Length: 278
Image 1 (cartoon, rainbow, N blue to C red):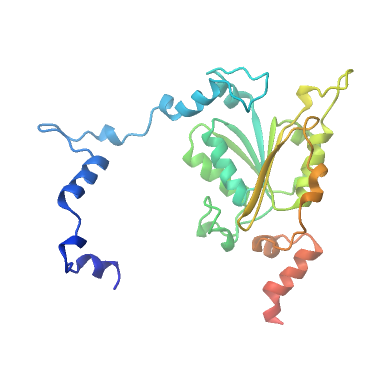
Image 2: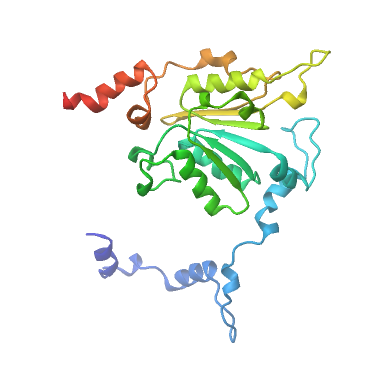
């Protein structure tokens, strides 16, 4: 009754068998056959060239749009500018952080940093695709950075295995964009205060553009999630809308087991993990 028996058993009716012409159509469509007298060329399976790799991104950066700032100047050279001068900090290397590192690397950002204080737990492996079973117990930031650099050429990711509070303010000042992949409201509030603390105003009470550090904030819980862009001095900051968040009643198991930080974490740890041992 398994797949082997199903494939080897003769079908009682011809209707259950794939039509030979239909099967030939699909196989020839997916795997084109060489013409008579020609050999199949291995170049057909070669990876895309450098221009083909960035074709869609270059098209996006070369045209105006309704969702960009009025000062946006579309140009094919923006990709090189992004890769050479823009440094991005990814805060968190968990479920969101793994996706963020991969997407940023594939979008032309070559100078990335990632900071995370957690280590890899078995419960992470079902959704944090950069980790393997042999990585359990290792720092998330270091493993995630290594995996992305192995798969995406030309990107450099610097991992930081520590608490966000352990870094000096000057560390955060070097980045042009900060992307958050955190499950802690307290940690997101801290990064928000750091980014807003760099903001300066000119004599006309307008934000000085060089001091504006855009933040991309996101969060998930179960099948729910949100994402938004926070531009200090121009949009509401994280603290402005913190009252919209419902009380947190679920906590990631890896946080409870590895880095419990609040009284609620300790209570959940005792209830879910240690209760049966008492």
